[in-house]
Length: 247
Image (cartoon, rainbow, N blue to C red; front, top):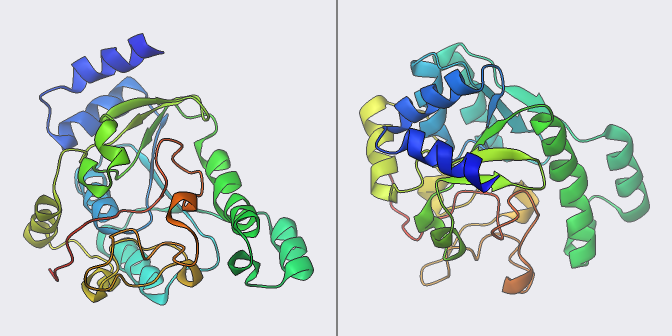
């Protein structure tokens, strides 16, 4: 698949993110999806897709444990663009069995329990969302973590057997914020309150001054164990930055 990745890199080189997204939509008609968690970067890409009527399907993972602020920006996005965002829920029976056996907050008790919860609420729904598609768009940026600096804007996802494209991979946080301001894009106000990464409410807290920008994700675990598996290359699933300034 290296040849396919290189071909797409060549085809998208020099294109703006909007032009690249349109090119991929034309190349894989009906086979391109974008996963949003309603963070800064994802809202930028959602705007690019919806405002330009690019035929890319937008979906989100509704884990059942999201912040109220996330639901608000989700609904505000629907109102603003009048476009559909498909929600993928975890298997209700699996959630019921897990919570019945271990309680609602078992993920605090061990890494294995937390990974079980992530697998049920995120990994399995993601696989359903990606099944049958050819290209997965994400909001990953190189600046977000050391691991992501060794990635590329076009990759092959072996686990899901599709191409991954990160249209704002080379943007810094200032670029993201400027785009949001210039285009009046709705965003999650938790970002203004010290949350560089916004996932499930029980598993995310604000980052304090002087803390590592990943400190707010699964903060009760050892740093080396902080991963859930949505992106196999790096350890987290949400947009993370080193800079925390209100828009």
